[in-house]
Image (cartoon, rainbow, N blue to C red; front, side):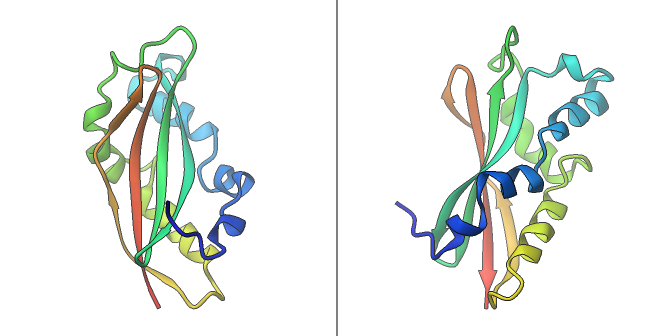
Length: 133
């Protein structure tokens, strides 16, 4: 299990929703398909913990009712998410760094891992942020 070093009190469910709003999924699918209803999943952010000078998060792709997440091309998403302006991982990391203000830490680098199929209705993409300071 990952240690939290008090970060679990910083990255509460409400803060995570502010960092990565529920509306962002619809905006992403609107840009991708021209219709938010075409999206097969909702994207949310989960804080996993702190380990070896890294904050560990997970982008959760949760299947929408009546849709098929497995039929979607979720395995190419880390590359798409890395550069898509609506998902805006770089901006997300900057906002996380702003929350660290006063804790003597800064974000040095970040990395999206490979898509993992947790179940038929849940896929995840790890987000690892290296800290300095």
